[in-house]
Image (cartoon, rainbow, N blue to C red; front, side, top):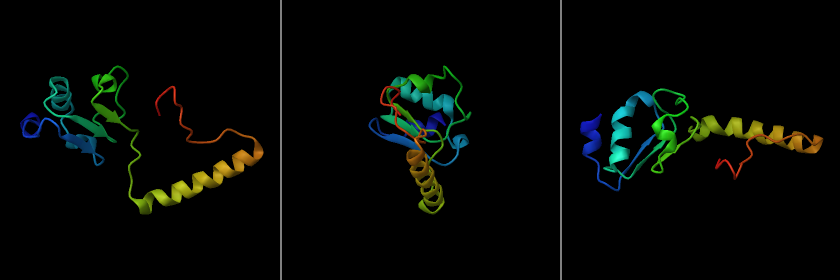
Length: 106
């Protein structure tokens, strides 16, 4: 909430990889707009997904990922499966998964 965000130092970043509801999104937007905190790195948001045009999308002090944070034990099987799919796709001349698009920034 706004009271807790106000306790943060101006250079501090809020990082949320847990649940979007743990952070008051409106209070966070206000703190980021006022630059009273350094920024926010969010893998989860409330609401999720953030609607098109939400203020967080356009903020230079907010980093938003698409709910991909995970523990290594949970991520490793999916990573392994993606590599296997991509090797097969590459060998068959098909499009690969998870490619970075420099123009889009992700």
